[in-house]
Image (cartoon, rainbow, N blue to C red; front, side, top):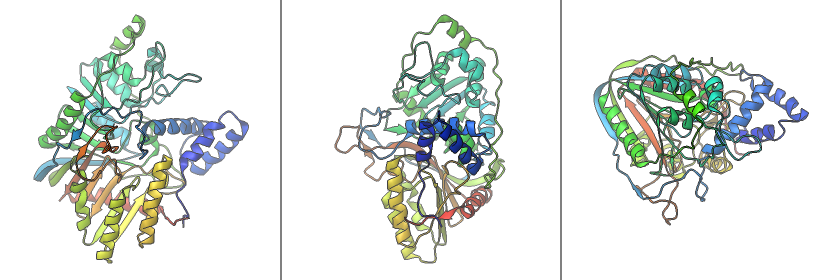
Length: 482
């Protein structure tokens, strides 16, 4: 039995703070042995520092202060009603991190012949070129350093795609980072190389993880562009093909956000750097092998396209999303939820009401043991305590396994599966009214752009999610308030 959620960011902060001391080296060795994530003690310290920096940038907790990344300047009114397709022929390929995420994304990206569109919260360097340099309040590395040393496979693949003449467009958040002189991060490099980089301003934050290839293939997932998310987290995604309707709908959202966003002017770089970036020499794309998790089963079902007839819906947050996912309350036999965090009290109340009305309902809730950000930790604990007090079991992810259980999916009556880029949080599924003023208005709410995919009548797709749910749930531990 577990007494409380253990906030891993406290451990990370400690590791980072004492990085240069002998004590830290000893402590880190112990942590590495304990978690056995497949890398050395020295690598763990570097990984911990990166993890803290990644999450500090993307912390979308519920603080009332305006976040640095919030550049919304006009009221946003819901415009995207859910897409609902009945008996549609479609190809669905669910895949999961940490063992299959990189391979699946890279297979799709490297097949691009015309275009690559990406909406992502941030685009983190795997060699720390996205984070402040030592003793400086600026970020970046030289163009030559990025070409020779950057190990993020997606960056390598996009570099090559641009030099093959493929149109690359990236929509992301602006964290107001300052580039050091003659330095660039991955986004600046790709912009110089010819990519369109647009910064989101329709709502507080784009939280969607979306990739579209050649306007034919769509990936929707919980996977951030960071080493932690891809290599160390449990994540969930799905590749959708053979559905012009899904592509057209999701692209309409992407186009709206991209064209209403803004492009940042880049510094003037030395001609030598520009020549390096414009050089069409191919960069080898290196896909790292999955880490070895020795104290738990971090594997997931093997990906493969499932082609057939199914009912598929796409829901856009915040546009009508809270109402669109309310279907889970109709569960009659079972409801299984696997999500990073629950911080929306009304969703908790709905779960309690479901169980009271139907005591025989098989309800299983699985959440991440670790949550970044003290605000979200506190909100999540309030929700889990309330569930516990009402006799609903919450299971926490395995203590000595992946860093975060960052997946977001749920299954209704072992018949319908929902998979989302967003959490069960007020930022991702805000309540009506679906009108969202900018910061400074008394009615301002912190809100995110997200996608949710609903799938019915695809038993093989459902089975993959169920197999993973059972595996992760059984490895977890009951949450008990401290």
